[in-house]
Length: 339
Image 1 (cartoon, rainbow, N blue to C red):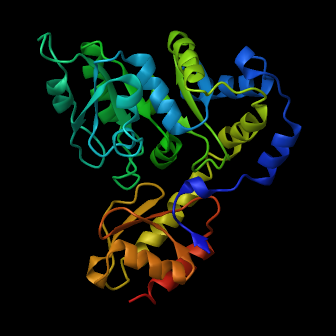
Image 2: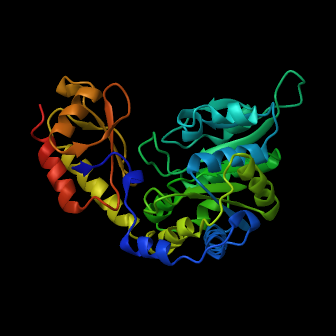
Image 3: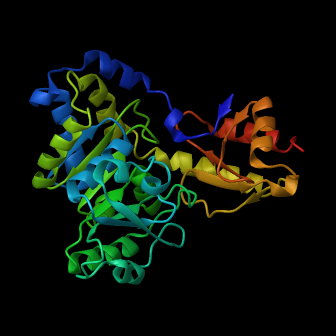
């Protein structure tokens, strides 16, 4: 089976498995796990922030960030198809007691002028704007890279109005590799950032949130409140260290495979690639096949290829560490046989 559903399906590498076996551990709630401490120090340095915190998932990291930045009754500005709004079960409302205000975008990039016009004033009828959230790369925009210039514009507006900016950077290393620049070029325009270790970087579990010391101190308490205080968590941190030190540059291979897949699909009758393939995600409209996404995916599965629905007639393919160039070519051959 060629699994192109998501980069979350990657299996840990042999080095990661060995690292888990050899990890030196302690109680992380007491801040005594040396491997967790090493991971957090490494992540903070790579992300250009004062401190970092290991969390169990990207969703937990995003929720902790909202809880840390906001108070109940605030409003959060975020892109209309963002992961925090679309895929996290309304958690920021359920946990933080905040409301969302969605902003349209072009390929995931919101207009700073529209952000500024959406920031609330002093009218007692209005909620205070507590946070602005950006997603990079943007999942539902097809893994598009939000340009650092766009992030800079939003950050400047936010700073002018004294509103923090949180970056859902689950696939931010993909953005950095695709842009051929340091990840700090993006994170410099954020107050806090979340990055996933368990997507393209291949670790089995976990994410990182990072910011200044004050933010992380407060975030640590929220992590505990949410049940995220772990004990001998070094067994999870060890593959995270390998993810950050050995798995970043190879993301370019995933991007190349996604481009290969997209190029091939453009030659398949009845299929249309609808996104500009910046990174490792390819969105395909199957409506001209006379099938909806569910029907098409069932036929794909019967022929040994997995993908996910992204709308009534839209499906998503995601390349990753466990998909080779040869498997992409085999998947393309399969696509040519489905009618």
